Length: 367
Image (cartoon, rainbow, N blue to C red):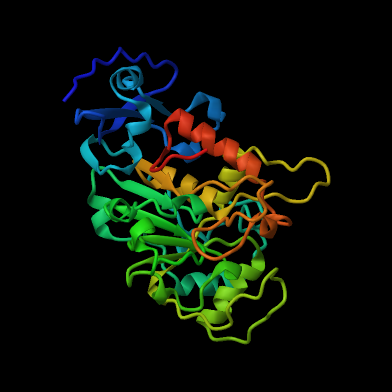
């Protein structure tokens, strides 16, 4: 086992603490075992409450042994992303920010939001909203996660890049596994695992029976992009007459979600993702609206709830490759994203900044 000396780390202008240390074990040619120690520094102030630009970086990650690894091993033989993670030390400092809308935030007081959906709840039909929040829960997951000194989270994107990755067993070891939309699990367990703590979705991406691809305790987290989304969930839960208008794709008219496992994400998170991470706000001129994808939003939420955030399955193929599937399932190509409300190139740059700053770590090689 090689020992690597770390240079002293000078951090200025930020109040930082050590968040986690991970060992990645891999083997080099000749059987020499190499341990790559990753040191992650996390800001004491919650990520979401910062008014500073991303350049001031709440997270700093330094690979101080890179030159040593290159000197000893053939880089093509090193596969640190496909090995098991062993937690050595971690200090929790996650935000206490509530992730979901709560009924008590609207009773006898004005909610802090001054914006309409998708970035706030202003004008979102207050009576219907209160009826909805009377039914759905607001607590975060389970008491077990609250008691952890360090929450490890992984956000699983739906990208084709995760196919044949054999990451399933590793993914299942995280405290929190976040999945997106209606991405299937059954039949893909070897690559994506089968544990699901939270699944972020909106009506058009909802599967009529969440129980088919999720665990009994999985939280189904509605991301309300528009008023119709809240209305859809209310009609489902109260078994009211369905209104089909207002959706770009017909959502399920019958939805078998467990009411006790449904949450509504606070739109404040989408606002912060668009504003602080993508710098989309305020909109420039009369251009068509551009909103963050559910995937990037989920990563931002994880950064506010978890101490360690890793990702897998993120990244789209080149727009020039029209036949390359974009998901690890199905046959959809980049053509299906042509008229979307997302700026994929802009998001790719944001993910690169997060990775370079040490806020997130990919579990597999990527472009």
